[in-house]
Length: 133
Image 1 (cartoon, rainbow, N blue to C red):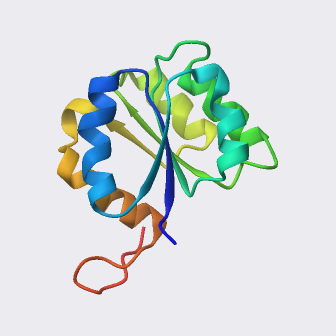
Image 2 (cartoon, rainbow, N blue to C red):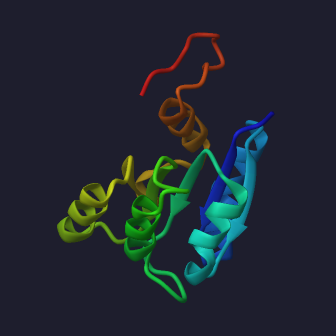
């Protein structure tokens, strides 16, 4: 069964650019653009990992992250921030709230994202070697 990724992103262009390589590697991608519905979606879908933007309609990504990590049903889900807002304050808050990592969209080559995700999920790489995070 493919690993499931909940992608919380309101910019359709960014979503398309980053989700295509993930789909090509076999990940099941669930997209939501409204931040206020992200926690509810995480509870119902039970993804293996969440890619989370910071600036979203409804609720900020940092508030979503905090809520996810405080909720018994979602606290074990790995969350990676994928955003264009990399102030030290945002990065520090995200890591303090429990994010696994913090990626700046403009620093991530979309084709490299599946490898980063595989590492975080402890999956086997294309060469058959177990990837550790």
